Length: 229
Image (tube, rainbow, N blue to C red; front, side):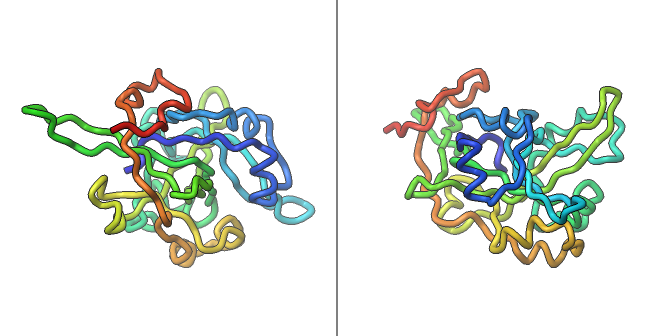
């Protein structure tokens, strides 16, 4: 699974990268550089919605952890941070979003933990996975709207798949990206199975062993990405 990640792109950079038409206030606020993003945090996301003038591509803020529209409360969202590609078009919690509300989540990379033996003790060692060239990753996601007592809540889940052979030694799952951003974001594509065909594993990732300081969500800073021996 992908349970923590880092993101730090400037809104103007994302506008150029994704050809964004509108940056919402919560989208701009979500672009503050963060290096230990955890479930229920608000994250930057790219979505596309229909407007009077045609399709409008937006940079918005979404809470990480999908809450289905029919959920009685928002409490379960923290457990729904990942949607498995194998079942994303079938599970009631995800299939409607997959058919109409798809997004992209820009990131620097993500963390995974691998059990490693140190003496007589086995500890979970964190690794940060990012492109070897330091470029941005574009994680595929789905999002949903939930109406609670205090108003509307927009939430998202990252789509994952089985890890590639090169990364399986770190963890058996990994996030996905898409082969065609425009088609993926287009709400006019309402066939979930067709949308699923656009999904591919994130390419060219390099795992780096990093400090266990990332284990605590209280820690946040660029130093969390530094490699250790």
